[in-house]
Amino acid sequence: MANFYNPVYWHTWLGLGILRLVSLLPWSLQRMVAWALGATCFYLIPVRRFVVLVNLRICFPELTEAERRRIARRHYQSLVLGILETTHAWWQKPSKLPAYRIEGLEHLENAKAKGKGVLLVSGHFTTLEIAGRILCLNTRISCLYRDPNNLLLAKFLREYRTSWTNRAIPMADLKGLLNALRAGEVVWYAPDQGKASAYSKLLPFFGEPAVTNTATSRLAHMSGATVVPFYPKRLADNTYVLTILPALENFPTGDESADTLRIVAKLEQAIRVAPEQYLWVHRRFKRRKGLPRVYFNPRTSA
Image (tube, rainbow, N blue to C red; front, side, top):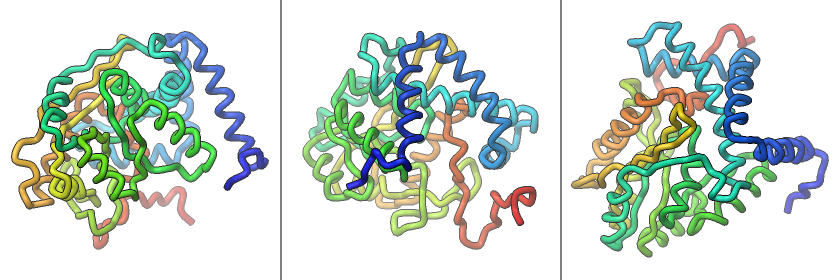
C-alpha cells in the first residue's frame, strides 16, 4: 500500500488543498478564473498545444487555421473549467451544483425497463465529472473507470465516484462489468480512446483512421444490454444540458466495425456542437501501424 504522506505526494496534496479552497468560491468567479488560467496555459504548454492543433487540423480541415486556434484556446479554458467542475462534483452539496436540464431521460428509463442492463455510451468531454454527478442525482448508474498514474489522485477519484454511483468498475474488470449489466444496471462507458488490442480496429474518426475500441458491440452481444448514447454540454449561460438519445436499434448486428462506426458517428455529431469541450489533448491518432506519425514535431525533437 502506498504511503500517501511520502514527499512524492506533497504536490498532489497541495493541489487538492488549493482546489478545495477554490471550490468555495462563487461559481461565476470560478468560471472567470478558468477562462483566464486556460488562456494562459495555452501559451505556456506548447507540447500539448501542438497535439490539440494537430487533432483539430485533422478533424476540421474545412476551418481556417485562425478558427482552429480559437477552438484550441477555448479548449484549454474548458479543460481548466472541467477541473473546477470536478471540485463541485466532489465537495459541493447537490443544491450548490450549477443549474442543468436533462433531455431524453425517458430514453434511458425505457431502456432500463427491459431489465437487461444498459450501456450508457458517451465520450471523453471536459464536462465528464460534473455530468456524471448530475446524472446520478436523477437515476442510479454505475461507471467504468481507469485509474490515473498518480496513486493518490486515483484514490480520490475512486472514493468519490464510488460514493455517488451504484458501483465503480475498473476498465480491466470484464467480469464485473458483465455482472453489472446482467443485473440490470446502467453502466456509463466512454469507449472513444482506443488502444491497440484484440478489441480495437483501425476505423475512421472524422474521416481519419484511428485505433478505435470496438468492444461495445461485443459487450452488448455478451450481456444483452441496450446501448444508449449520452452527451453532456456546458452552455454559455453557466448551465448544463445532458442529452440522452434513443437506444440504438438493431444493435449489435454481428459486424463490430459497422456497429462501432454508428457510435463514432453519434460522437462526432456531439463534438461538432461544442468542439472545444472534447478532450483534444489526447493523442487520438497515435500508434497507427503503417501510417505517418502525425504528432512528430521537429521543433521539440532531437
